[in-house]
Image (cartoon, rainbow, N blue to C red; front, side, top):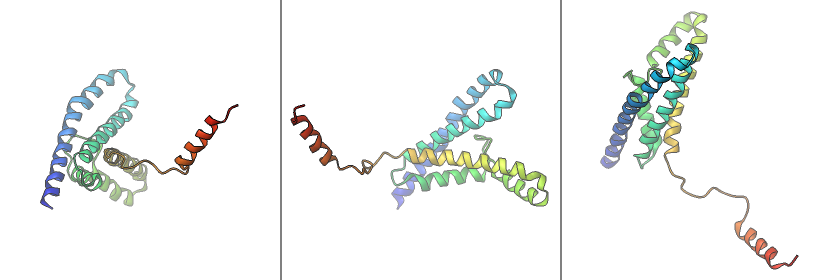
Length: 163
C-alpha cells in the first residue's frame, strides 16, 4: 500500500512539473507569438485548444508514471486543479462556475454563460483524462471476428491451385 502511494505521489509531482513546464515554456510563448497573427475573436479559442493539448500531455505523463492505473491518479490531479487556481490553466475555475450556477438560479440571463463555462470545464477535464487513458499501452491484440487460422489455410489452398 505504501509503495502505491509513493508511486501515485511521484506521478502527481511529475504532472505538476509537466504542467508548469508546458505552460511556462510552450503555451505562453506560443500564445504571445500567435496573438499578433490572429484576430482578437480567435484568441480565446486558440488558448482553449492549447490548454487542451497541455492538459492531455499532462494527463499522459501522470498516467504513464503510475503503473497501477492512470484514472484514479489523474482524477486526484484534476481535483487538485479544481480546488485551487494556481494560474497555470486560467480556463479552469470551478469556484467561478459554482458562483455562476448560483447566479443563474436567481436570474436566467446567466444561463448561457453557465452552459458555456460548464462545457469549457468539461472539455478541459476530458482532455486531462483522455491523455491519461492514452498513456497505457495496449495489453492484447483487438478481438477479431475472423479466425486467422482458417484464412491462412484458404490462402495456402489458393496458392496451390493453378489458374
